[in-house]
Image (cartoon, rainbow, N blue to C red; front, side, top):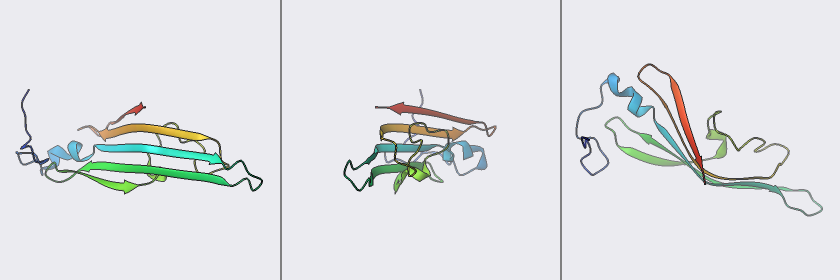
Length: 113
């Protein structure tokens, strides 16, 4: 298998051409934790906490992360149903990857852990 990486996170070939848009379409969602539950006290307060990051590829194949939140997860993501509403118990840790191929077909994979 050919290695097209320089080892510094940037492709060693020019991928700025629109033919490589499928690479820039890849998004990686790291749901390090997403918790929602009622406090259990008389106040019925809903407690939420999360750490979600989104990784993307830049113009030349450089990969970067940015902090985000559960509302940025795509519709295809499962396990966040009811987040921010009512307050069903939710506890989720996962990695979700989605992309559009060269024909603009959507695809995704989710791994819960």
